[in-house]
Image 1 (cartoon, rainbow, N blue to C red):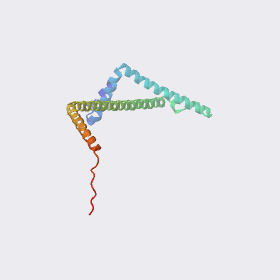
Image 2 (cartoon, one colour):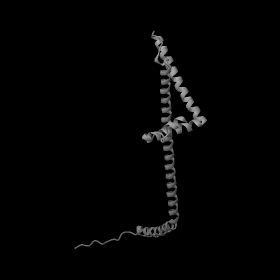
Image 3 (tube, rainbow, N blue to C red):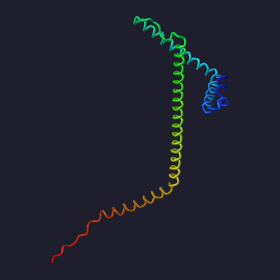
Length: 176
C-alpha cells in the first residue's frame, strides 16, 4: 500500500506516464495477492527459486570439493545469495508469464478456428437446404420432361423398327 502511494501519478507529475504504469502494476499485483490461490502460487514460485539456488550452490560446493579446492562460493554471502534467489525467481515468473500468454494465444486461436468451423457448417447446411428446395421445386418439370422423353422414344422405336425391316429399293441398270 505504501508503494502505491509512492508511485502514484499525482506524486510524480514530472514523469506521469511511467508513474501511471507503475501504479497500475502495483495495483494489479496487490489485487492478485488478495486472491489466496494466486498468493499461494506466487509463494510456490518464490520457494522454487530459492530451492533452485540452494541446489546450485550445493552442486558448486560439491564440485569444488571434488576438485580439491576450498568449498567457498560467492553465494555464501547473504546479499549475493539473496540477489541470486531474486534473479531466479524473476526468471521463473517471466517463464510462467510467457507460458500463460502462449496458452491464451493458443486458446484464442482454437476458439477462432471453432467459430470458423461453425460458420462453415452453417453455410454448408444453408447451401444444402437451398439445393433441396430447388430440387423439390423443379421436380414437376423433371417429371414432365421425363414423361415427354419416354413418350417420344416409344414412338421413334416403332418407326425405326419398320424402316429397319424395309429392303433397299432396287434400281434397274440402264445402258446407253
